[in-house]
Image (cartoon, rainbow, N blue to C red; front, side):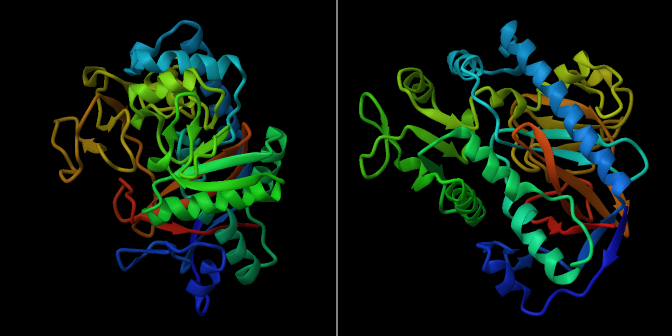
Length: 369
């Protein structure tokens, strides 16, 4: 695993914009940075793929245990959400998309930082954008990236005729990703309708869009935990099928890493994580169970001095033993390892000068040879 400097393509902005990637720059700063790439060997990719599949399998065992034994209170999941979680699990509503955030240096075992289980983003850039870059810059090399093909096949297996997709469309990152997901559904033969999440209403029997059309299937790029109690009650009284399913609330909750460590103590791909700081006799990272991005993530030294004072702390937290991302050329690297239809399907890489990455941290492509 090495960090490689390459010249960006001329007019690279127009190339990626043709793929629907409009948020390549954020706040006048480059987000997609193709002046950098990461080189992996095939054996390193095999390690990442194996670790991703193993972590996901462990997570599924944990979900089953939590639901079977109704351990929701350990994750601070409100009681009104329990019936919807159990319904989605017992009716075998499958997971289509998820992303593990992993530390890996090419030498030591990959370590799970967190599971983005409900509304994972960075999909468009990990799928089409870095594939386009590879085909035009390093056409003779490989890339661990079957995301697009696997997504299309996953939608085919759903056997949907129609599907609504919803998000907060005022955010370019959300809109571009939801448009990309709609295109993958269309390739699978599904008719799609985009709508703003706030325009979805309840008519007494069905959820409906702004055109008063009933919504039977819904992909939402909007977290379950942001929904009010009334929505959960209505889901129980309707026939709506929602992606990702409600049981993914368990995996999207950082508290699950505490329970995962309890179930698989000492596993080489996991980090010691607790609800109580007294159990960690080393530096640790505090994470809010429902934090988004770097919100609520604070790096503490064992003497309780914070090294990330600008982070925001709120809500219930978990405390994870520090395992800093791989540092190459003064850049910290986190690998987003994607799971499509329950199997490892590719990676995307983000890097920054700080060990706690944020929304403006660079996304960079990778290649394999």
